[in-house]
Amino acid sequence: MKVELSPEQKNIRKQIEEKLDVIVHFLNLTREERQKQSYEKIEKVYAEMGMAAHKLHMTLDPKPKLQRETVRLRGMKPEHPEFYHHIRPVEELLNYLDDTHANDEPVDQTLGETFYLDVFTRKWGHLDRYTLLRNEEGWLIKHMSQSEQGGRDAEPILSYVLRHDHVSYPRNLSSIMEDIWYRAADEGLSRDEVQGMLKEVSEWISMTEQNYPSHIALNKNKQKGFFS
Image (cartoon, rainbow, N blue to C red; front, side, top):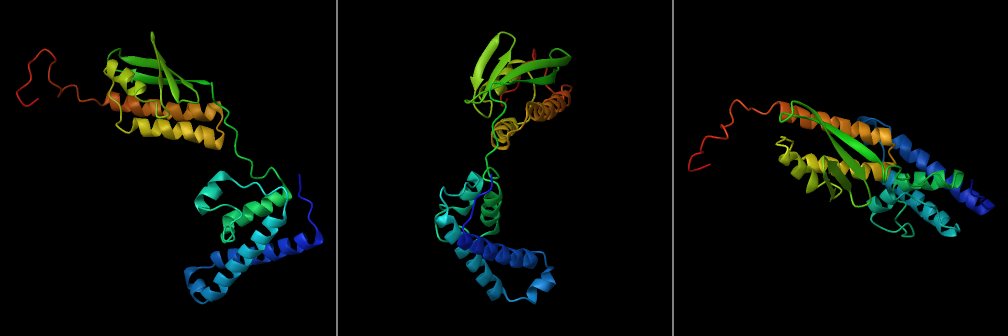
């Protein structure tokens, strides 16, 4: 739904768009072309754009909806006089005026969904399936008769289950699992997209496991030296 503006608000919007066009044009110049421009003039345009956007923001009721990440990056509330001294929030403000849902946050689509890690194990000589249920706490890991709740990085459960099966895995596995959890939430990824990422993780673990130098490893039945 488009925001209905008063004549005065429409005039302010026009000012904002004109200032934004000047800034975007400047940013699209080559480095050499920029050096020929007056940086003081551009700074003035930034300030004028920011003040106009702030003025328009404060006259709107309800206040414009902006993305959380934009507010976080600016490090201040949208009502702060300097909040709009940047292109990103100004563009979001203009988008909001055209469509009040333009800046809606993505909806988390995969809470409660079940996913799979199909990992090659030297123990069995073939792919072994680990089932993961994505929930608010993180990942519920299921394998054989085990079912334990892990955090959003799938720890400490996923690494425990893999070690129990003598599976070699990358040391930063937990970091990737956490990234997948948050991307699913923040970007509203579909089930297929999340499963696709986990498939890549499965292949990553399998590659690590398949390249384990078993010909170097000491025989389990042979006693290790003093410094082992």
